[in-house]
Length: 298
Image (tube, rainbow, N blue to C red):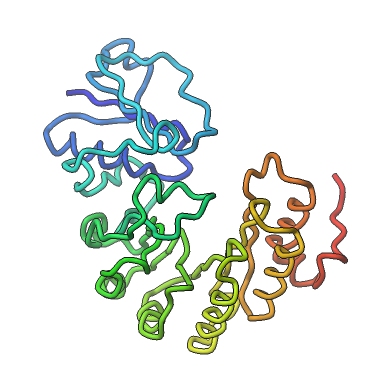
C-alpha cells in the first residue's frame, strides 16, 4: 500500500504517532511518506493519516487524494489511540532526519489530575510502565522522554536504571515531580547524564512540601541554577502576588525559575512582563526585583 502522512502542527518537533505508523507499514512492505498533494493527484494514496497535537493549530488546508483518510491526535480527539500493534513498534526516525534524538514514553498517566492538564483524561490517573527503553531507543546519544510523571510509576527505579545504563544524555521534557523525590531517586537521577533538570511549582497546593523537597534536593546534590530549573505556571488559579513569591523563593533556593503562561493570548500584560523579566536570563540576573523592571517599548 501507499501511505501518506500529514503532520498538521508542522515539523518543529517530531510527531511520534506518525513515526510509529510509518514504521508499522514499512515493516509490512508498504511505502510510507509525508503526503504530497501533487503526487496524490497523479496517483492517489491508499491511506492518509493526519495527526494534530494542538487544538489551536489550523487544520490541513489542501486537497487530500486518498481512498481513506484517518485523523487522530489530541488536537482532534483525546480518546484516540494507536492500535497496540502500531504503538509497540520502534519509531521510524528517518521520517525526521534533522532530529538525532530518541523520542518516546516509558510511562503513561499521572495521578495529579491537575485541571490545566489533559493527561488524566487521556492516559489515566495511574502512572504505569508502557515500554522499556529499548522500545524506542536504538543507540542515539540523546533521549527525550515525554513521560508526564515518571516518578509516580512503581517501576521508576528500574526505568531510571535503564536510562543510566544507556549512557545517553537524558532530557526529562515534562519535568520531574519533586513531591515524589527521595534520596534513592535523587542518587539515580544524578547518575543520569543530563544537561538540565526541571521541576514544577504550578499552584498553591503542596507549596510547603514542594519547598521542602526542593531544599532537600539542593542539599543532597549541590546543583544550582545552571543545572536545575523550576516551571512556574501563571494566569491559571494563582494570584499575581503568589506568582511573584514563587519566583523569588525559587531564586533564593539557587534554582532557575521559568514562567509558563496559561492561555497566553488572553493573559493580562503583567504576565507577559513577568515572563520577559524571568525568562530573559540576562535581565533576570541584572534586575533583581520585578518592581524595578522597565521593559523597552518597541
